[in-house]
Image (cartoon, rainbow, N blue to C red; front, side):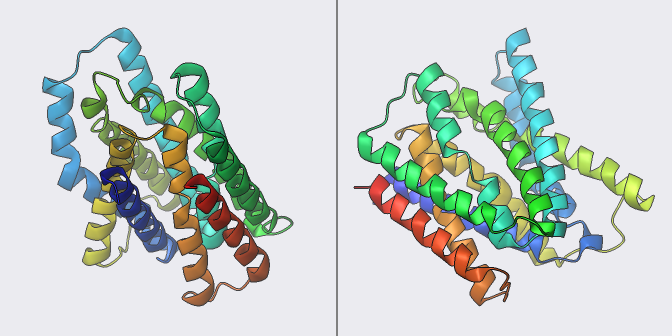
Length: 281
């Protein structure tokens, strides 16, 4: 397996891990709040150093950075609310549901091109995602789907644009700037916590091991994806990360016993797997 392939595989496992950790904690623990705080404590200083010593600040860059941070904040707010309303098997696929948008974005603005089998693989995977999303209509899952799908697409479009060109001269620096987005997300969750409970710190918390593991996974998973984009087209990398949907769906059904419309979700996961096989053909 190539270096990029290893990076994507590791990213998939980490992304699935922290999403499952966040979903299966009590709502009052505000798991995402603790996970983002752990990330900022453990990896934030690296990002601060980058901002202070390695960035050529311009008005355009500052505007893009603020847009990215705001989009991340909205994304995590939506994600927290969605996990209160729906199981991992539905929410996680919608979080990862933008390969077509990324493909078009990369083709129009970053001059990347895809082969026929890559377009076909993405199309099959997206079809599987649509089936997965349809399984949540007419119940609480549907409310979650609308929230996450809308905001996750914006997060991908605005957050990833400057990082998806393999020859971008500041790619290594941009890989580290997502820390600011996570800081904005944590601040937004803090304000939401204050509004909901009147406290600045959650009254309860997950176990320390879960907080630490989630904090590492939430940031490193993203950095590994950006690393893979140095040698693979952006849309292809995003599509490959949908392997995490198959893993999350299987765990949701067989480990966590989330049985609602499990046959439809299993069929959708099979379609996504077929798309990934086609993508690599």
